[in-house]
Image 1: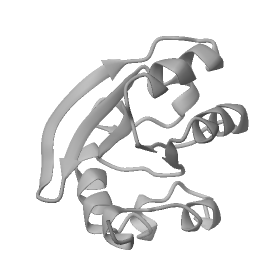
Image 2 (image 1 turned 135 degrees about the vertical axis):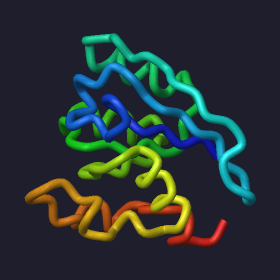
Image 3 (image 1 turned 90 degrees about the vertical axis):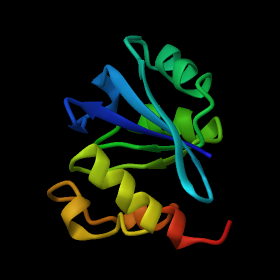
Length: 127
């Protein structure tokens, strides 16, 4: 499984539409197997979507995301977990443990209604 987290410094980037980097982590049943960054400098949303999809990402964890980009990514088969904040390493650990629904990871004003409809961590479902 390949998980991407939009990053700015070592934290979740506030807006996926303008993020310039994704931290990509390959996971197996034992945990992370590789970690690397990709740059997403495409300004056009359809090109940005193609870049992300072409990276083989299964799940993308991000802060805010516009509805058009969200719809494009989901239509391409990527599971999006929006409205997340925090340190990238802490967020990855919470995802692996299935605890991203913890309020400390939610953007202010975000009620996690949308996130509750999505896989909010590997521990929240059977593989």
